[in-house]
Length: 266
Ligand code: BGC
Image (cartoon, rainbow, N blue to C red; front, top):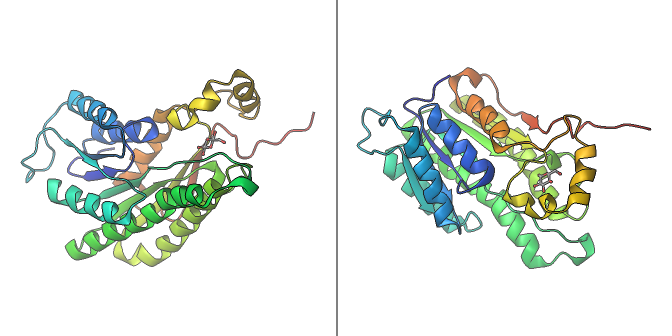
């Protein structure tokens, strides 16, 4: 599988799953735009790792070396999302792959959720994804090229997650965004799919990872008996971004160690 000659933007790629996706796409030969909101040092670390993968720029027409480029943008702001898209396209001359990875979650019982927290979660996880995807599609239409969109969703696009209702609403929305756009964008040669991780060892889970009791209870629910690693998610994203997945659109692929469908009676 190769992504040589392709350019990918991965939102929220200064850490965790996003960083692993950037590295996996770069290993496959893609040029990558690394986006971050508040961790410039994480973005620099990602860029250094991309550089360490080495190699030349795979785009014949691309004057840029190294093959990574960092851009600061808060996905919760549609203006910043648009600037991110413009800057990404300008830097490498085009975009072929968009990975909507940036996401946040806030813990609170439903009856205590504030409007500010609801907006923060929905703005990053859904509104930002909506308008980043729109700008990407506009670019593909203008340049008359096909493209691949991969959304990092969650098992919680289907599975209830008490105390994270806004997060579940955002991921449920992402599920329908993907179903809808698969139909609407199919004739343009644009595919869109969701990768839905379960419990992956990343910064979004820091609290949980540091709570032995909660972690133990969670592991009981995972048939494969361990948390996932960011690389477990990244390899599927690389496949979906490649031409080997050209006939795949409108689907969700779970990377969860069996968590979603686990039901047992003692
Ligand atoms: C959430 C994590 C959670 C995991 C499994 C993810 O989507 O971000 O906080 O542990 O799902 O429930």
